[in-house]
Length: 78
Image (cartoon, rainbow, N blue to C red; front, side):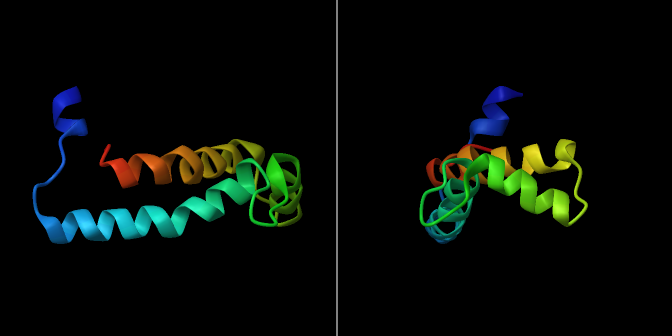
């Protein structure tokens, strides 16, 4: 099952689209996680999501999903 999750397509169009999507998502994740690119970091992101009435148990997966998730997308994991 692990091999199936980590296997990537050999189609170059899908690879190109996956890399472009990962590059687009990466800055948003780093804004939320580390405060790069004029972001607010974890504390600020949690505060902003609390204002929008998004619970912390939903906010954390968003932060984690956008940060390492974009890198995993670029490299072809999952």
